[in-house]
Length: 362
Ligand SMILES: [Ca+2]
Image (cartoon, rainbow, N blue to C red; front, side):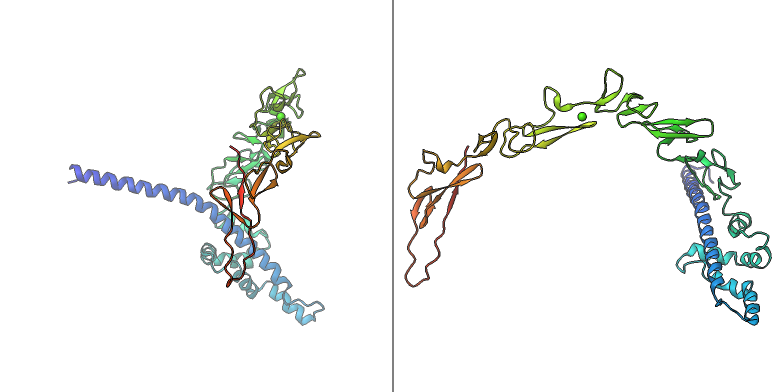
């Protein structure tokens, strides 16, 4: 009774679940194909390392005839093969150990029967026998040539997806500077120095160009931001700082750079400035005055009219301002300097302190 409503819905839902699982398995399988080849490559690399390592073993030089016979026997022995195979995988690598266990007999076959005729173990084992890899420049289940051909995949300007494995789709991911299916076109900011159907060399444009046909600032198709065309149609720096209104804040000065500009903080003795330091002020900040072209601190305490007018006050000059402190023996209370209470006779006399009232202007 599948034709009734709820059952049909349930069946549909089940089917869509199955489809999803199959999809996941398909993408998983694709990834597995690439990683299986990577694992196999590692195994054959380690085999070659093990081969070299065991060649040096038991070899002291100056062997007797007996030793040499023994050694030449060892060279092709099962003992040596076992020693090499034992070192193929890290004990933690499940994929590697699984692959070696699954195909152990192939190593024996190669070692005793194929080594001489097929000295390249990777090619014989990974590509031709267990078929998890492809020859370089080919990809996928049938080892098809990469885009651009197996000799120079992606015309030498990119990576072919799945290159050398049974996975991937053979599409190119281009190196920096190149684009397009075949990695023959140049990205913006690069131009074709050499170009034909199978070869392309993209070179970076002059830093002033957004797009270009050659390497100088006269070869720009379009200037980059911060650059403009001069009367010779070359891209030259825009001097943002020479414009009528400065692009910077009031307490900053403008510094022109090639292709851009920056805003730097004025010296704190300035109120507005045209450059760095106290001698490039447009006006002096409050508390400073212009002396010989430089804004210097005003010593308010030496001005004719006393700035600290209250009784028992002392004037202390600071950079850009001054303070009115109470004289020694006096402390500030409600804006007045009053005498501090005398210490009682039993107690140790405390060292006299000076309390301060910072001057602030509003
Ligand atoms: Ca500029």
